[in-house]
Length: 291
Length: 216
Image (tube, rainbow over all chains, first blue to last red; front, side, top):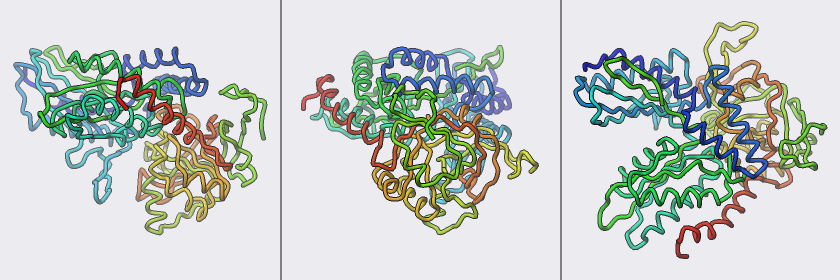
């Protein structure tokens, strides 16, 4: 299948706007679940406002949150595709800038030193574009994640050592959630990267934070740790917006990579309650939108 | 003035206030943590770059903020031809609230130099802000972060804008109606829900780590 680059540009625009407006069904189900189990009155009231907001955004065709985030596009190239990779990245960038100018969206992206805003949501290395490969025949998938800064500002890496063991990982995750408090817009998805190099560890944490609710770590030990940490984090009492309650995190997600005999790295990246993402799937039948 | 409106927390001793800005020191000192407030009138939008330019680079605003409320925001707006409904040439698209903690060091100058009485934000602020509220008379009203679609429905108009070269981090003047209810998160009597939760959660840390099998 030959990839039509104009269709990719159009989808990159459409995906940004869609992601900002409609929450994925797994996140909505997550809200329904924690709203049922929450016992604190303030927390319950705050969750109610969040759930109302999801409906208001859909009813008024508006953005869920004003933070348009740093745009991230995760591209998965299947088998048998004919695509000019360099042009594909340019098309995504063009679509991202068009969404910003044409909708119009707030450009939340500035030069890191001059702080100049080009009002395109683009800049050096931004949008972030990750290219990966899958075994799906004749399929191109693009996932769009507008990553809000409230949660992104609470990102942490610790190069722990083997002698500190798994206890270092558990303690670090608990302490990161405590340090973040209400600043991350809880309830969050706490993404944890375990292993790898320092950069891979942080990337794993981001992947974990943006995984759908209900998904489980592919590694059995990682999956076990997810269950333990999810229960533990929700005993801390941070609660929605950091104002107390049972619902601190929808879940703790873990992604793992092998690491060096001398290393024990752990990274934390969080996703706020407006856990937005959208997906476009290109097949010979055309483009389909989903989550 | 407290009304009979039911408090969302269901606390009988907590009051609800309907306030129209600007407010007096006396009005703001009546507010206690866990009270709720609904605002009417004028609300100013302010953010990181706005305050960096005002307080670190000495830029002045032509707006009089005395007795007013500011909200930590940078909105999504659409440029339109100025008319009666859009006097500043901007229509609101989506207006929400950002994390307040980054702007902690600006609370005191905002109050002493510009006379601000109320800060609306999310996630809370720290000791410096609590001390400024106590010394000068101010309060922090917590909005639910990430609920901008709802918040936008409480904003009637973008009346004016200053320091617009910082767009979207300009100094915005919004006309608001039924803005809230918002929870008083920090008051002028040393009360802070955030400090309380910080201490509560720290106190639970050891027990939570023990439940994970972490050796002390």
